[in-house]
Amino acid sequence: MASVAIQTIRKAYGNLEVIHGVSTDIDDGEFVVLVGPSGCGKSTLLRMIAGLEEISGGTISIGDRVVNDVPPKQRNIAMVFQNYALYPHMTVAQNMGFSLKLGGVEKTEIKRKVEEAAAILTLENLLDRYPAQLSGGQRQRVAMGRAIVRNPEVFLFDEPLSNLDAKLRVHMRAEIKELHQRLKTTTVYVTHDQVEAMTMADRIVVMRDGVIEQVGTPLELYDRPRNSFVAGFIGSPAMNFLPGTVADGRFTGPAGIAADAGRIRDGEVLCGVRPTRLRVVEGGAMAEVKVIEPTGEETQVIARLGTDDLTVLSNQRLALRPGDRIGVAIAPDSAHYFDPASGQRL
Ligand code: ADP
Image (tube, rainbow, N blue to C red; front, side):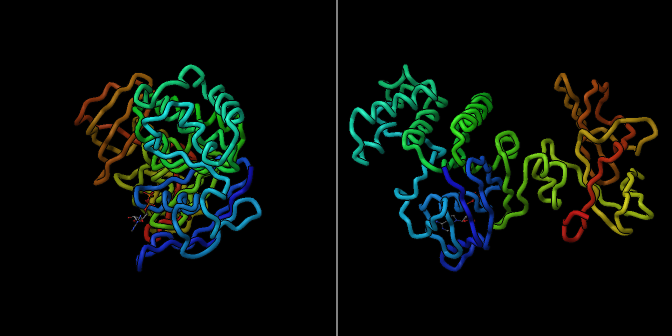
């Protein structure tokens, strides 16, 4: 196992710089998720760690070794791709053992390692099958098996669950997390799905447009987002943002909705409130129900407050219909405040 240090890394394709000098450290044994919208540079960063993309500036170290000029095969990493990249004409066992065979490892040793990995991934009964005879989840497990047999210092995952249906994705998410708890191999995992990031990561690196916006544990990002981008990106359904004014420690927003603003300076602000922290109450700011979505345990209401749409997630069964007028209030200690111009947390 090894730590990974990323120092002021830049990447340019021709004249176009897509990663603008990012730095972060991944501890030995840690599970770190790189997350951000499509095109923010997370795959490029992962591929630079893997050695599949040249580094335009800065250094990447794995353990004590700067690997900028070390070829992928000698970096002691193993990568699992979205499309699995299995060889169709090889059995599961052959797929899993292929890199060892290429590396000149003895046949009996390959067999032992493949069987060991197959046991970890409960693939023992599938070793003689071909990829076409496997389900999506099984193929994904073979791809992980192929990484495990190499006993790498670092696992790199590039959106490994994107091709699976929603139910299997949730299942495989737990499997990968459990695997990490067992093997404790340093892992860097790329996804655009913030729920995947929240549920799997020890720490999350949120990226946007080639820079890192924030690094933290899932709950640090959820409870104290550094800016309105992270606040809106982390959490589902997404945070509501209400424009308004703070005066004397009190926020007032659309339709007179109000909240305590404590030590926030007077002036214009953007007030962020999570859907679960809005209450439907008598005497609240008046809003008009647009859409109501009961899911059994919870009711999601989209309502218009002034000129803004709000999402309210209630754990009550609300008997509401589109067009109804409701009162909405912000629960105590639930408002996040951001500078409306820069988006920075106040
Ligand atoms: P993500 O994984 O976050 O979706 P990528 O790392 O794939 O983002 O891409 C980051 C940016 O780099 C994007 O703007 C993308 O268009 C650009 N890019 C990626 N690969 C190349 C390439 N081979 N040539 C030019 N631009 C590229």
